Image 1 (cartoon, helix red, strand yellow):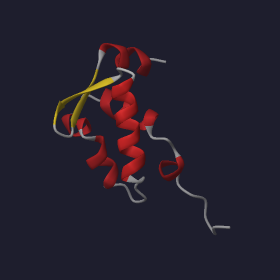
Image 2: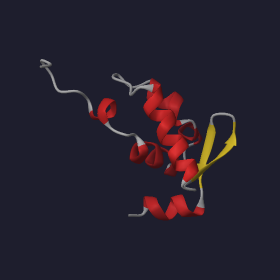
Image 3: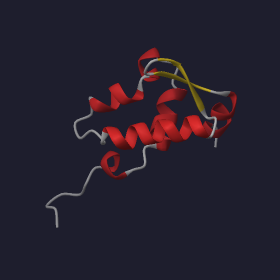
Length: 81
């Protein structure tokens, strides 16, 4: 057993976190993978890329350019809940 609890970012699926970052008006947030790598205990890049792929598959976000994403109309409605 670990001496300390694992950070939520390490354990989470990252879908909610990525969606929340994309909902921000700040342009830095359009690359959630890069931003999350800068955390003290960053989540695995696989979890982040899986979350982005899932959100693209369900139509919640779209790729604007390489590594740059934005919310779709559907994604904007999901974030309101």
